[in-house]
Length: 133
Image (cartoon, rainbow, N blue to C red; front, top):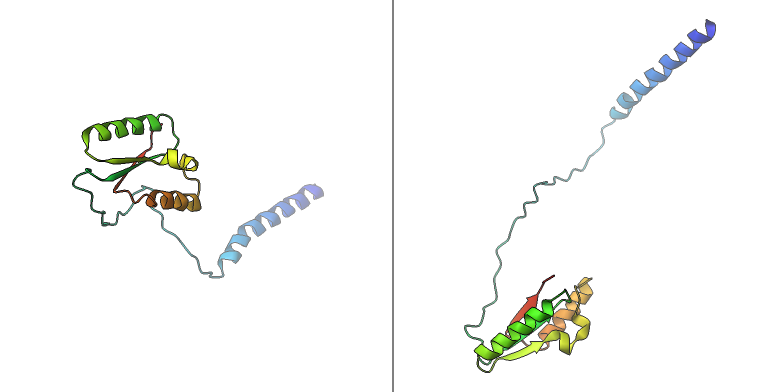
């Protein structure tokens, strides 16, 4: 019987400590930093200035960029055919033929900048990119 009482006292003591610890730790005020996150996924869209588009493609340079995804090159090849047939003096540049290392989905900011520099080096009037799968 004495062991049962000791066991009961020990259990009560442990329970009292467990109940008292949170109260003791909340007694001190600490600064908290909260970040409010909207779970809806709504993004605030800022207005931006869009570059002027050419009124005609006659005599202009059109650069085609393929990211390596399946059939994207086939679509761009067809776009090139149609532009050549329908637009007088249009110059078509297929970036993947000039720079085969650009046939990829960009994996880093540095790679994206490198691809952008290669695109800009042709001074295109219009860039058409294919993002197909």
